[in-house]
Image (cartoon, rainbow, N blue to C red; front, side):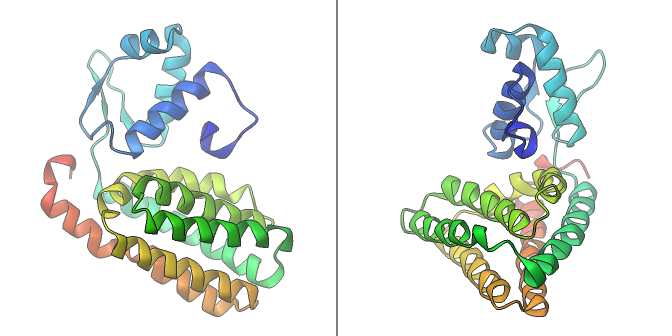
Amino acid sequence: MAALGNVERTTSSDVVFDKLFEQITSLELLPGTKISETEVAKSFGYSRQPVREAFTKLAGLNLLLVRPQRATVVRPFSRQLIANARFLRTAVELEVIHSAALDRDTSFDAKLKANLREQADAIVANDVSLFHDLDYQFHRLLCASARQAFAFDVIAANKAQVDRLCMLALTSKAVMEVLYEDHQELLKALFSCDSVSASEVLRRHLGRLNPTIDAIYTTHKAYFDD
């Protein structure tokens, strides 16, 4: 992930951040899991300083709960934080989609189409992890197409709050197929320069998590802190 998509940074702190971010959002590290700065540093062969920096970044994304004189833990889900993050992401991405529909950089069209084909392949292979990664890249490409690449840092920072929920929700081909169809409709609207339809599709797409969050709260209440 390289610090939320910034591929130019390759510090030790970024390496630790990227690895822990992946483990947390993929649920390899479950909510409430204790995590030791010393043990992480030892596993990477680093000093504690870059690990401490990575912990601080992850805490800033509300993915770690760093408690002085107490164990650091993977932050439990919070319905309020999730609601806040989804509100901000929706607001930003709607503007991105509006910009793309009005004046997109067509040099990204081929990459967007290729990404869709790869999503279809991931569905056939029932590869949830790959589909999740392609979904992430799809929305990054949308920002680039809108000539607003910087906006993805904001989207990614807020998307991180719900990525773990997505991993609990993306458990079947049927779910992936629905999201894939949304992506198809979104591209169709963008390529037709139809900002109204594109916005409607995006709202529907992002709103699909509403019943999922309620269901996950019921079935995995131990993972929540509110």
